[in-house]
Length: 508
Ligand code: BGC
Image (cartoon, rainbow, N blue to C red; front, side):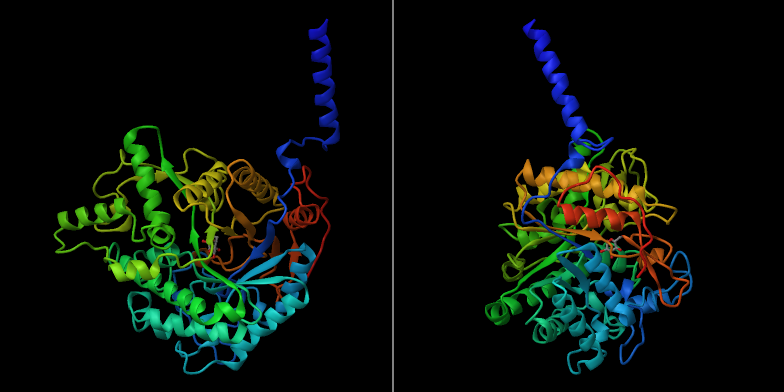
């Protein structure tokens, strides 16, 4: 009898809870956001501004790249994109509509310094960003500013770009210009966005600007120079600006997760090595207590280089002085995440990749582990991977402050974007597990992206926006997607809503 009573009570409680949730909802979908978690959206200069030759702006490496026939998959270019250089006030209205706490955007180096060097600052260029910052603040939106999101002045590339160690001087000079002009109002700086993507894809593969294909050599040289440049900008801020401007400054690293394809020791080891190549390459020198590149990786590249007849490792060494200079140079871990890949050395045979190369140094084959592939494959939905990646950062680097500076889903458009909402919901849920269950120290969440934009080598056809942009329309009218309405609700309710909002047509 007592047993029957317990069952009846349990059934009653379950139906009560189910009744309280909207139809089809689950516990996860009802979750509240932790207090203090700030929510925003991100874009990058080259992807949204257009105005590629407005005023005295000089070309960036992405202007050169996208003007070269055959390099952008859909044949589009970045000349106009969303025309945010002209219509930035509309972007602010959209941000206001969403109710975000902050807006992460980037600054175009050749717009601010047309020669690439700090000899002459463009009045119009710096003026544009100054107005943008002012208007964001006037609307109660905090600016989060990336100093470099891949659009290097072509003039500096002509001198070797990131493969020239002098880039550290040039970047420090550029940083000083930005702190002087905007640092009274900008309190969060990100030096570099995703070093792996612009250095390995840009100097080791024919995928990204500047299209220098020097696999396993030029890309590794560029990584060392970029770390030094980042550290120079951080030290400059720390020494000369922090006290007066009172801001925070760090780096953003692509922290997609990598793991073994199975539980075999060889696969597990391949997963760890891949994580070192993908993330630790950039994060260990800055965030680990010892500094320097990951040991496993240093050893692997040294061994392969010797086998290949190189008189020294293809991976440049960091001197003790450089190790100390780079170590500790980020106030937070800027964390971008899109998906997870699974590694196995088993299927790897000579000839799979060029020798030498980054992929050959990893020496394993990767896939998405049988998960349903997203239209933009690198955004394939594997939400548990973000929780693992956040825990990897926490365990390895003594639980640093983490700012999630990008997370998002790419498709090719369509009637609705329920797939995008589904992705965001699942990833935010996994992030909340990482915060609440695992104790990860996450301070911000940033959706990529505010609106459709120029998706690098994939051009304008790839869609990442909460807002759809009409690229056929001269005014580049933006329309809120269902995901924009969903994200607006998430921010307003500070909770993961179980139901999709009703669609209404909202144009900007
Ligand atoms: C980059 C963005 C890009 C996004 C989606 C990130 O790697 O920072 O610029 O648009 O991924 O692919």
